[in-house]
Length: 266
Image (cartoon, rainbow, N blue to C red; front, side, top):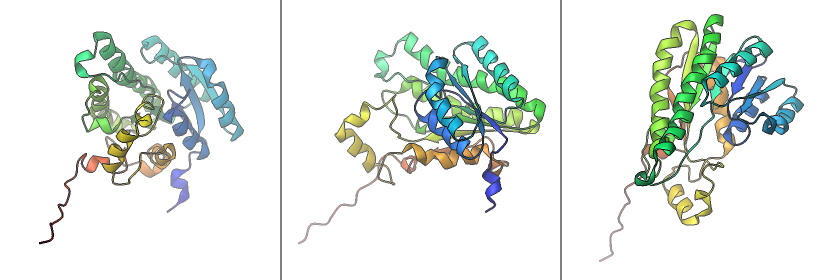
C-alpha cells in the first residue's frame, strides 16, 4: 500500500482534551505522521510539557484554552487555531468526562455535566471547526465515542447516553457536511485504562471478568488506537464517512459467551 495515503505532512490537527490521557496519544500519533498540532485544555498551562514533547518531534504546536461547556470559549479556540495555522485539516473531538454512579444516584447536575461536556460540547466544537473546513472544501472530523456508543453498562447512564448520542451525531453531521468535502467518523475505543476509570483496574476480579469477555484476551493499550486515528485523519479514509470504528479487542461481538458443557464420563 502507498505509504503517502497516511502521510499528514503539512496538515494541522486540533485535538481537544490533550492535557492527559488518550488525547495525548491521539495527538502524538498524528504528529508522528507529520501533522502540526493545536492542543487544548481548560487550563492552558498544563499543556506545556506535552507541547514541548511534540515540538521535539519537529512539529509546530499551539496551546489554547478550551472549555467545551462554553460556547464563547469554543468559538475563540477555533478562531485562534485558524489564525495560527491558516487552515485546520483535522479535528479529533476528544474532550470528555464521566460520572460513574448507579442510575438511582445520578443527580440533575451529574447528568448536565456529562451531556454538556461529551455531547453538546462535541457538537459545537465540530460546528465551529467545520465552518472553517467547509470554506476550504476539506476536513476530517473524528468524534471520540466508546464501546458504550453501542452497548449499555450499569453505572454509566449519562456517559452511555452521551456516547450513544455521539454515534448518532456523527451520522447526521456526515450527511450534512459530506457534500462540502468534510468527512465525519466516530472512533470508539473499548476498555482502555484511563484516568477516568483507573479505579476499576485496581480490582483484579473485575479485570479478570472483563478479559474473559474480550476475544483478544486483554484490555486495550493506548497505542492500539494509533493506526485507527491516523487512518481516519488521512487520505486513506477519504470515502468513509458517518461510520463508527470500534477498537475494542472484539468485545462488541457479544459481552457474554455460551460455554460448552463437558460430558461426564459414564
